Length: 214
Image (cartoon, rainbow, N blue to C red; front, side, top):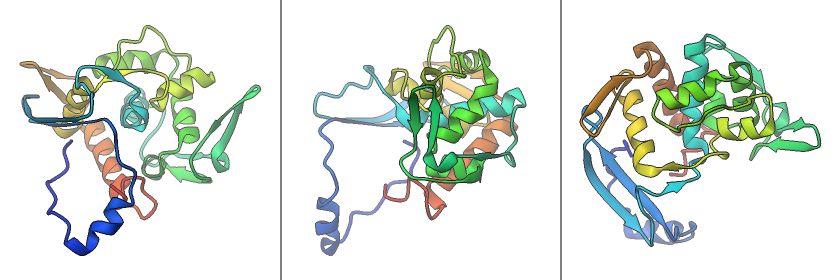
């Protein structure tokens, strides 16, 4: 969790806040981006920072990094999100909302599963290699031409401990260098880290960004 602390809401804001869904379990982590040291840890319910969970769209920045590193895309690349539905035979990958052609920053901002899958499709086995290199998941192989592979690219087809995922994000925060457990390792180029970090900012600043309600 690299977000800056927020001031407590005014009393008048309480009714709106209380209308939001209440999480039964949650993990909040604050890591030092230069060392990977855990600075703060809080859990709700029976959550465990070391237990594996389905990470969802928090995996997408790593898929984007893999595509940029492999040279199959640039930040200016545009992809057709097909109004939020892409068929894999009798099965369909869907988005939460329909979108047309978007560049990478907008794809990440609106969290399109369809366009993320299209971005990952030409990677083949390089996606699994990249996720291992980024210390996200130890996957032997991912078939990015299938719905199962598309699910992994979007974070729905794998499980990752919250602590390991937070540590993986130190690479974006420190110019491509991963830090955790006393270990520091360059896992992506400084340029890739900067490009993806700029895209992640759009998740919050874009009018349609999925981070706007956080």
